[in-house]
Amino acid sequence: MRKIRFLIAELEGNRLRVIAMIAAVIMYAFLNLCSPLLFSFMIDNVIDRQPVTSPFLAALCERLGGVEVLRDNLWIGAMAILIINFLICILVFLRGRWNAVISEEVCRRIRNDLYRHLQSLPFSLHSTLKTGDLVQRCTNDVDQIRRFLSGQVSEVVYSVATALSALVILFSIYRPMAWLAMLSMPLLVGYAYFFFRRVQKAFTASDQAEGELSSAVQENLSGIRVVKAFGNERYEIERFEKKNAVYRDLTFRMIRHLGAYWGTSDLICLLQIFVIVLAGILAAGQGELSIGNFFVFISYEGMILWPVRNLGRILADMGKMSVSIGRLLEIFDLPQEEVDSGETPPIEGRIELDHVSFQYEGDHQPVLKDITLTIEKGTSVALIGPTGSGKSTLVHLLMRLYDPSSGVIRIDGVDLTRIQRRWLREHIGIVLQEPFLFSRTIYDNIHLAHRQAEEQQVEQAARIASVHEVIHEFDQGYQTLVGEKGVTLSGGQKQRIAIARTILAHRPILIFDDSLSAVDTQTDARIRASLKQVQQQTTTLIITQRIASAMDADLILVLEQGRITQSGTHAQLIKQPGLYRRIYEIQTAGSRKGGQQE
Image (cartoon, rainbow, N blue to C red; front, side, top):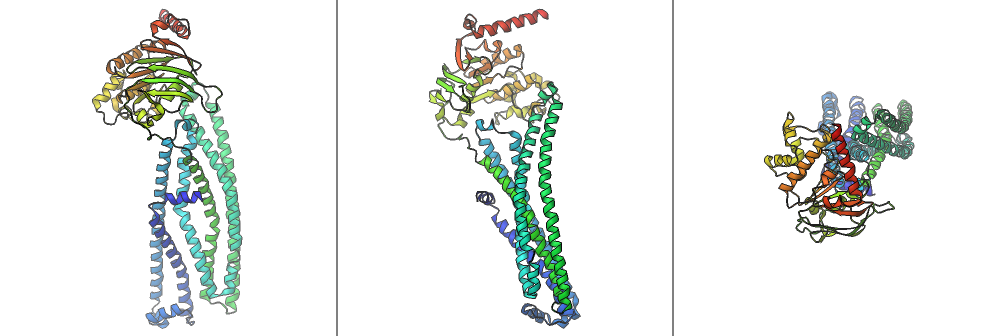
């Protein structure tokens, strides 16, 4: 029932079209049945001069001047047949048009709702979901609903209207043969339902395998540099071929079910028609059935059987659609992140952490343990420490991608959990170690941070990020397309463009999450010096593994195993025994050795 309610809700705004389409299909079914009746009337009553038994046809003949007039003017009957078929053509066109409009409009609405919901999911969920599977649900599963709405809904209406109307007419003509015409219908309906149950399971398995295949392709193409760097092409090909083979086998299984159903149901229908032909010949030979009515029985039998036989296809597609709706509802059931509730206090950049701890769901050990510190507005703080010490997790907490397991974080004295997420993120700029660039121009990638910014502001941000001169070396300058995920740029160029994008946003809090790692030390120093001059009131957090990037910060924090083990300036920390001095000695020794070799 929930899937039906979902579909009805998505039909909002198209319900009048649905009613009009159903009316057109019913009219089409009625006129389709009229054509054989008109042929029967012309053969039996006009040409063969048998008495007219139908009151409706008798009244119609009287209005047209009687049967003799029609016999002398056969063009009238021919014209009536042409008009009926012309109307059928119009109704078929309207049926197809409304089917297409309804299905495309509904799918457009579903895609918009789905994409809006995905954008609203919390980061913690996105980090666990498979991108390829999400893409497959947003494309193939939505398209499965479109295919059903574009043909099968009207087919159901046509099948029911045709079968019921045809049976009523056949029973009014010759009851014994009408009962015979219904002989295979219960068998076809039962077989269609049995087939539906089998094919639904097969389709579910095939759809899940396709999702796994899509995930494998997406993951491989996203990490193609790593694959090439380690020479893993053969391994990835074999991995893909295994998943593809599973998908092929499960799809073949579904196709075998389809083939068995169509072959068996075709045999049942043809045997039924053969029985009607034999019975009709016997009845006509005994004078119990006229030639015209025999023609009606043969025509109507096909009109009854093939739609009923197509019930299997309809049920199969309905089963596929049901699976697809179920997969979409799994996404819609995921809880959305509330980004618009909460306070919107002025944010200037003072950060306080009061006994903050954090543990990821499912982990046994906390990532951050009892962190307490205060960062004053306008100061620069560097976080340095080994991998896994909790540096990036601290950034996630400041952005409210996660909330602390215990303790309180305050921005300018306000508890972070009371601040509206959207408002908070509009005041914090972040540059990641692996920046994401869209497949657009360099200008568009920088400009998207501040849509109202002018060209001079974009260029100024690029100058601060030490990338303006590099951009002008490209043939197209700022209009250069960077390719998907910035694949045409080097790591340092991508990082500097991402820095320019964040600078353009003018946020009071700026976070560099190891985002200077791909630039040389001179460029690193130049970027930090430019930032100090231009954004003196900005609170800056620099997460880094490089002493050169941290040494000019107002405060340096050393994190080890989720705790702050050292804090102070560069001059203070190199005098203290501990991790910072060890890193400094290793890196300065490495740089001296590199200088001697040169």
